[in-house]
Image (tube, rainbow, N blue to C red):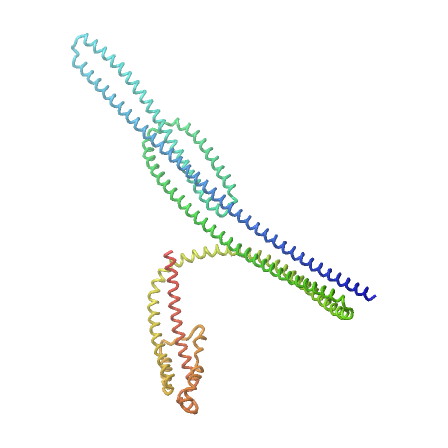
Length: 564
């Protein structure tokens, strides 16, 4: 029966040990599952961060490519308009040269015909007595001349028609020039709109589609205007006779407008270059801002990784402790096996083992409860950390807005400081001279006071001279109230000096009191007041030095800002 009871007790002990091992393994698996969950959360956070970073870079690249495309389109349109204007100017010059040559040719032929007619009339008047044959020949020649005149008149009319056609061509060219000017004005308006669009692209990238629709609508309007102007062109062809008189004036206007166009083109190029520079500066500012944000996020990520690694280390330490407990359990099992040989000793040892197991179970339960509490606390801390990170992100966004407002305020303050710097420089020179002079006077006074103090400390019998020093300091006009924190100066007190002077006085007097060697005119309080006055003078000297440094500092800042 005893053996059966012992075997049953051993079996119960083994079952309890197995149950403890199973519970410990279950807890270890739970902890490992929690660690895997935390690592998965970390991976998800890293993936979301990388995805956000990729989206930011894609948006930045898209905006940059769209801006480059718009600039290329503007440059191509400007080049095309300039080429068309140059072609029209060359055509107008060629037409003017041809018309001038034709006019000169017609005028020369008309003069020749008039001279021939005058000569013929003179010959007819002078040779009225000539024979009929000469008259017939002259009449024949006159007929021939008339035919020639008719032919010349026909040629003249043809030349006039050619002139009118050339003038029509010239008017058409002028109309085309006017159209080109109107197109150029429309293009300038488009340029201004595009500039505003370019500025808004940096702040509102989502509005690009609406702006493209507006530009297409403007192009449609321009096409409608071109069709209307073509209809007006047909109407203006009927008024060619009136436009002949204004052709010469329009030539001069064309030259002036060509010069203006060249100037406007140069202005547009300069404006485009300025816009490009501004855009590059703003892009660099945005890039630096994003890099700062990325650095902050990387730092947060590294911190969280370090925290998780520390938690893993703690869990490993706990697992090692559990392994130590398992070793202890194995030792207990070995002890149980060794107890099977002896009976009486086994009963005593069994009681001790039961007590130890109960203690271990209680300790194990306490450790399990403690681990559960720590785990819950860690979960709560992580949740609070997540909330804190969200709040930090919101605070970072608020700080961005505050930084932008602060930048604008600083720009305005810089302008104000640059304006007021000249006045400060003028006033600063005089103030510096006065302050330097006061510094020199105060330093001399402080040096004198230190010399007098050293004399007083070396010779205690001459301490009565402190009264004169106090009176001179009280009556001096440069005395001022001490300001600021004088604790560092007042720490040099009379008590410390007296502590140093007492052993020397005792050695000199040979056991006498220190009051016997000090003159009766000055007491300890008066000497303390003198040392306090010396501390005040030292404090005034330091205050003057701080004033000089505070005066030099804004001057240095303003000069550095002007240099920038």
